[in-house]
Amino acid sequence: MCVRPPVSRRVSVSEVTIYTTAICPYCVAAKNFLKNKNVTWSEVRIDTDPARREEMLARARRTSVPQIFIGDTHVGGYDDLVALDRRGGLAPLLEGAA
Image (tube, rainbow, N blue to C red; front, side, top):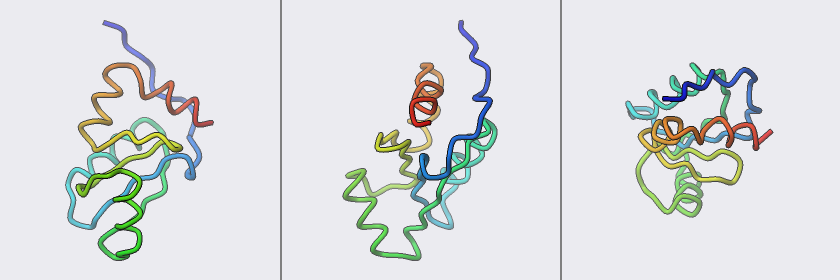
């Protein structure tokens, strides 16, 4: 089993976007996961801005939250984020966003 060290630099806020709502436990989990990896993000609250919800639907083609993007790449939700990391795909994607 290959163990990767955590991403040692902070990725720019503009590169990681998380669409969230106030009462979403998976949103909190995704933010904590990224925080533990030293990654910052831009949070878009779709429960307070209907236009941003429409933006999320257009970008992700999904209605659930969180929806996570690294640059223009749609990662998916929290489970998708964790699975990507376990496969070793998260760090290269974050590094490519730099």
